[in-house]
Length: 245
Image (tube, rainbow, N blue to C red; front, side):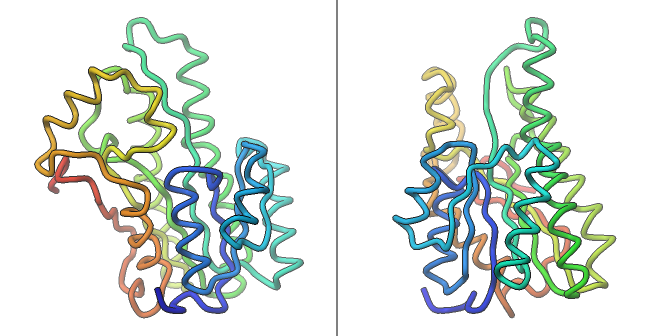
């Protein structure tokens, strides 16, 4: 990959594994200065492995921690050009049996934390009059999923928020978009039951789940110039044909 992100300062969350790690590695390869964050303490060794500038243990649901990390990046790197929100949790429960705490935890991590990160990143980006935000949602936000109402609702919120923020910021040079992957072979999906995964593969026109490396180029496109210059409030769907808008 060429240096399409040269001189870009990027923050990627959920980057200790899965899609986040693949995007962060692709950003490094494309020439960006990358900070990766995750609540998994392995994030520090992952940063060293992929050549990121720093790996930070982060509770993305903490407003103070999110604001402090963005302030640190701006202070040490001189600004922030790209934010990728790729963190998340995934659990299963029928709505009739779902504990309120399960619903709330998913909303906190998969939606509210994305809001906190977007808000924090927008402050320096709007001052710079330049920036890109990429929020990783899910195709389940569009079609729903059995035993995944809490996850689908959170990701639908991410898409709606992405579109709304983009309307506020595009004229100021900050472009905000979302990626809604289909099922991807990641550690997060490993916890879903095997019957669900077999049924889902059977539904897919491509007949298989994707890999994190197949999602990363979409993030590079959205973060790059001129490749991402005309994407405003869009939802790109590398999803094995699961959703065809």
